Length: 305
Ligand SMILES: Nc1nc2c(ncn2[C@@H]2O[C@H](COP(=O)(O)OP(=O)(O)OP(=O)(O)O)[C@@H](O)[C@H]2O)c(=O)[nH]1
Ligand SMILES: [Mg+2]
Image (cartoon, rainbow, N blue to C red; front, side, top):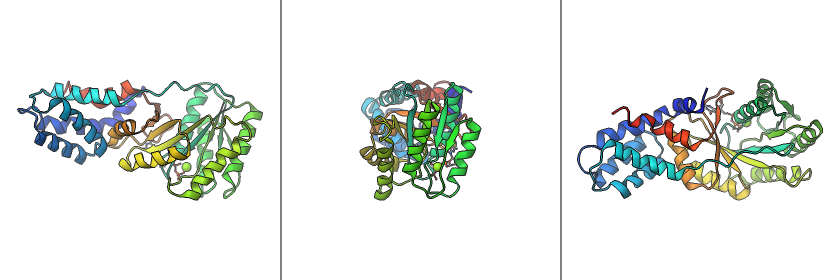
């Protein structure tokens, strides 16, 4: 399935909220402050995401206030704003052998699922993939990862539950080197950015694997739940202060009207969105592509008047 159809399904609620709401409001006379406020309120209520609602109506305030515009013109202003805010991630080059990727994030964001999906994707590209079960904290986390590794056809390095995650990561790096793996994906336990000891534990993981090679990990990707709204931005900033994040994975963009969160994430953070998760299945992770995303968000706008 192509990227567009996957995210279109995922973004359909956001899109219909965006389009239906303002159609009733705009299009009748001049655009006033009141029109914009009503629009903003509707967008927020429609769960487009508070930040995205502000961003889009601010753009209209600057360009459309006092003018009589058609629906098409209004959509085109919002669309240009989205284009300005988003950018494509730099190309992903997995040229290190192994290329070590550390996956972090708060509890339940979708880290383990994303690792399973990534493993499957890299396998399909012909890569030899190893996964490290670095979440030794949550009961059943290792079993869950084992199921994903099997599905993806990737190898797994694991220790006992409650063992030191840094030791798992260290051993996994050794195994990846010995076995000639192309990619090593390291899972970690979910943690809140404000729990110092848990952040220290992550730092220790990084320090320990750097004993193999100071360039490890080549990437640190933060997985964020696309539904969590404004909180995501502040969390991400704190993670980024402790770890140089090289990319973001925004999950759960299916079944939500919060597809607009991608806009606010992009506008507030200078970290590329690399992947988006649009379902629970193994193939429901797609590379983020600005053009496709915008298309999915606005595409029916002009045709369904
Ligand atoms: N709908 C949907 N569900 C997802 C997506 N990604 C993950 N999930 C679901 O979110 C839930 C949590 O996913 P996990 O991968 O276990 O999350 P985690 O970050 O590893 O969680 P912890 O290890 O407990 O911190 C599971 O039920 C997944 O199926 C997605 O893109 N869309
Ligand atoms: Mg997990």
